[in-house]
Image 1: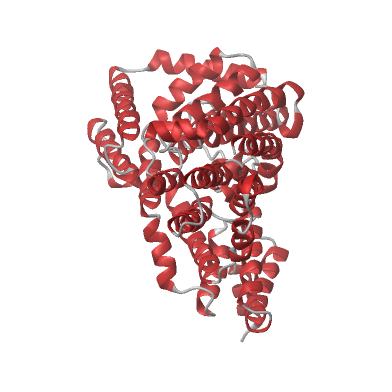
Image 2 (image 1 turned 135 degrees about the vertical axis):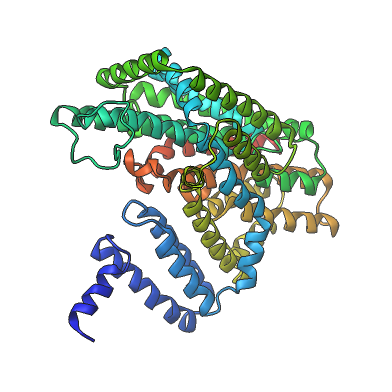
Length: 501
C-alpha cells in the first residue's frame, strides 16, 4: 500500500488523540486475545476492566466511546461475552437508556429557566461556603426524590450557561452573542485568562459538590438510585420502611458529607476553595440586568411554561407517574409545543449531549457482560459470603464499595442481593441477618462508589459531558476532588454499619 495511504489511515485512527494514546489502545487490542488464549478468560477479563478504566481516565484526550467500543467489540469477538448478554444488560437498563435519551433533552429546553434561577442564586449568595452547601443540599434533596442523572443534567446545563456567558466577554465579545464558540480559547484576552482559570476552578468545585450531593441523597430513599428499588423489591420494603432502615447509616453520612463540603471550602483542599472572580460577577450581574430589561412578554410566557413544566417534572418523578424516560419525553412535547419550537433542526440540538453518553453506557454494559459471563467477582463474593457476624456485614459493605468503584454499582448490587436472598431462602440466614446485609449492600454500592467516575452513572455523565473539557474536569481531577468525600463518607458509613449490626 502507498505510504501516504498508510499515514492517512494511521492519522484517521482515533482522530486528534495523541500518538502515544493511539499506540496504547492498539497495544491493548493486540494483548487481549493473547491473554485470553494463554492466561485464560479470567485474567483477560480483569485486564479488559483496567483498559476500559484507562479509556475513561483519558476522556479529555479521546471520548471513551471509540476506544472503549473497540475493546468491547474485540471482547465479544474472541468469546469473553456474547451479544445476547450485552443485549440483556441493555434491556435490563432500558429505563436508564430512555432517561438519558429523553430526560436530558427535556432539561435542554429548560435552560433559560435554569440560567434565570441559578443566576439569581449565584449573585444572591456571596459566601462560597454557603453557595456550596446550597448546591450540595439541593442536589441531595432532589436526588432523593427524583434521580441523580436528571439532577446532574440540570447542573451541567447551568454550568455551561454560566461558562458561555463569561467566555464571550473574555474573548472580547458581548455576553449576548449567540454565535460564539465557548470551546475555543484562542480569542480570550490576556487580561481575562487568569480570571477564566479561576472561574473554571470555581465551577469545578460547585459541580463536584453537587455531584457528591446526588450520592448523599440518592442512597437515602427507595427511588434515589436504581439499585435501591431492586433491593427494596427483593426485601419487600415500602418507601417509608426503606428510609427508616437505612437512616442509621444514611443520616450520619449526609451530615458528614455536608460538613466535608464546608471544610473543603474553608481550607481550600483538594482543588476546592476558588472564589467567583469580581470580573466574572460583574459580567453576570450585567447579563442578568440586561436580560431582565429586554425580556419581552413572549420571553416571560416561555419562562412560565418552563416553570410549569418543571413543577410537573418534580411531581411526576416524585410520584412515579411513569418511567423517568417517558416523563422526559412528555416534558419535551409540552415545552416545544407551547413555546413554539417546531423546527426539526432546533429540536435535534437537544439530543446532542445525551446520545454519545447513551452509546458509551451500552458499551459499558458490554464490559459488565464480560464480568458476568467470566464470573470475575465470584472469588470476592464467595469469600465474603463465607464470613459470619459483624465481620461479614462490614465486609459486605467494603466488598460492594470496592467493586462498585471499578464496575457498575447496579450490577454489583444485583449480584449480591440475589446471592443473599438465595441464602435466606435456603435457610442459611435469619431475616434479621438478611436485613443487615441488604443495608450493607445498598450503602456499600452507593457511598464508596463516589471515588471514581465509573462508580456512578451521574459522575460518568459529568465526566463525558460537554462541560467537563470546558472547565478542565478530567478523570484524575474528579478522583482527587472526590477523595476527601470518599474517605469521610465511607469511614462514617462503615462505622455505622458496624454498630447497626
